[in-house]
Image (tube, rainbow, N blue to C red):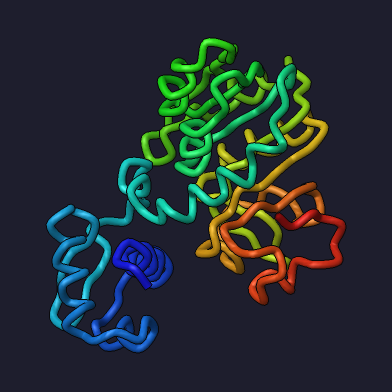
Length: 249
């Protein structure tokens, strides 16, 4: 496992348990405690955690921000992005919501792709601005710093004005029993609105969020149409998601 993957695992464990130990992390990742200690030192220098005797804890109760997350699992996000591109065809209207994986996808779009993108994702806008053939519609609403998105009633109301061919959903948690979940309640309302107003919904999910749940439910797993991950479609980690009418890519 490369260093960035260890970082992402450590931060996910902190979000779930609020405190971790060198011993526990070393056993889970099959590396030495010295390796874990160096990883935690680097995350501490970046302000992503607080060090305690024998381990680490979250620096505050606030979730990690968009900026914090953007540097992790870059290779996996690129794999997901490249898998998603064939689903995008010129002439489409596409909802794209929040998340670092959505932004990674935007960076590798074909230069001649001509689509309309409707989004509440603020960091996505300057990326899409580089594409001369992409029309950008930005939804208003209350800005959430943690997700770098506009959310709330205004966002939902504006999204209802459109009918999209495809909804590319950034995903915080996905489970075969509990479905798709997210970290804040207003975000769940926006996601449901975009789903209702799209002909097809595609979840972009790295392997670290499979079989994980957040606090607010978006939908059942079988309500989406396509699940794209960084794993091979026949990987054992996807077995629980098979035979539910969802295309696994």
